[in-house]
Image (cartoon, rainbow, N blue to C red; front, side, top):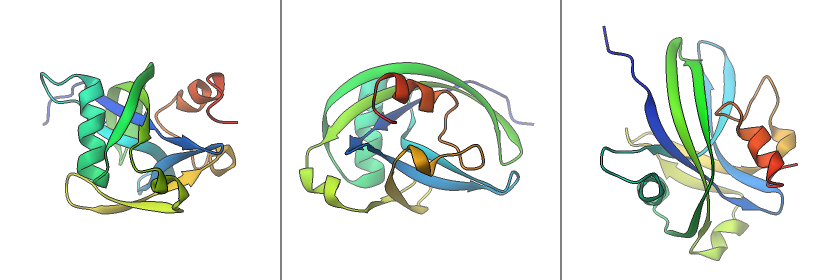
Length: 148
């Protein structure tokens, strides 16, 4: 049996014209599509702001600047039938390459090599059946006027 632990992660809210960039993934156990901004685990000894720069570079092959902390969320959830617990540092940043904002989607690759497409979505793309995760992120972004 694997030991349960709290996982620290950093995610980044790239926003443009009322939309944010999110990765879509599917939970087979719940038969539900979920949407999460780009990001990933914070390594031991790594600052969360450095983790988001590294994650964007590793997953998307892109560089960013103007990284700033928006807030911290705690997420307790079930994914793929297994419990999870994350402390989530939520960042805002800008892509160095401004042409990225004109693309309909961006190709990326997870740490396990699985490809993904990140898309620009607005608040109408999220619902209880197809939520933005982690829990509390939608409300945080609304309170900061980054999402309608």
